[in-house]
Length: 495
Image 1 (cartoon, rainbow, N blue to C red):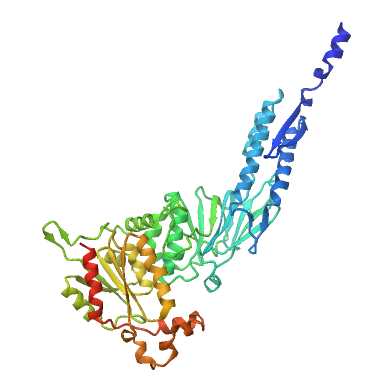
Image 2 (image 1 turned 135 degrees about the vertical axis):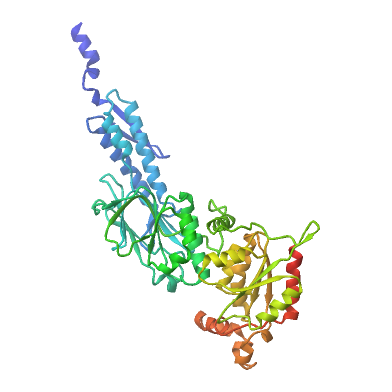
């Protein structure tokens, strides 16, 4: 009887570690047969990871700036998430299917083991990398290190190059933007300073100094990238311009609760739980696509109003019951090019129609210009960077853009830089295209000159030549009689 029992039950008298496990990976149900031993937890994970890596490796390709992205999507992080999910499933199967469960320490070690891989995105206007985990930043060398563990699926020293300024297709603008490297490595420098909040690295090079580009290339992208953190974010500037920080300090203090970090000559190794290199940006100027992002241009304008403590949310109605109100008209002046040569005459005409007129130039004092624009119901000016201040106008205000002489190229810029964005801002748009007789170019060139006859031929000579003529050498003398109906239309829209 004893001999019979031994024969029947022999398969079950051996070590419990001989239990076979079946793991299913992916949709095509590849099966792995694993023998449970003291090291089977590691073997299960390694084999599962190996299969998935081989499957996903073919779906990756390297693009010209050395960033790795999936062929069918820009979300490279999805691969990491998929592998992590399989690893979690492997752990669960192992624990459920064996009577010899791993120790608590082994389980915790596997559960906390993560595969590090940045999400690097390349879009029409911008590129950026989002990293999370053990991130180490060294400013002096312009490097961001992702501290990889030995179990990572990523190759050693894989790197991505990012110039953190949101106008990537403009070679001239990007030429003076510092290039940052995002690297994965097991050999990383030791932390000298630890931080508990996310960090965002961006450049103030490019076209900084131009009011329009400061908002379109930096301010709005900063909002899109950082607003999600509700102030709990460290802003890190490369290519720092101190005057720019002073100019926009009210906005920056509202965006982050921490002092801005100047990183270029910093020899410390800063460690963060999350770092974003570069800024998110919608491809259209002064715009945000609310379907793509969590915010709209209205949210940005509300944020600006809060940053500068602006009082007015909506433009006045000229008739409010029995009480008449006088609308305020702001004429944006310019000192050099595209300036009005008859500002006083324009102001006199506007006052005669019932406007209270303010004339001012858009300078670097943002508190002053924001307050002045917000106090007005109508803003008018010649096409140029100063018109970016329509962002501070109250809802339902009127914006009048004076389009200078210059043909289709000038009209295209006027439409895409300000006309379309203003409509998304819930601002009522009016446009006044000047005639040749209202341009000072007619005094500088004969009527048969190509600059007068055919602006498109000048455009073919390149942007710099075109700009030097139609933007840098042209001023405007409005025909006030011809312009009067535009002002009257603005009054009608305020009723």
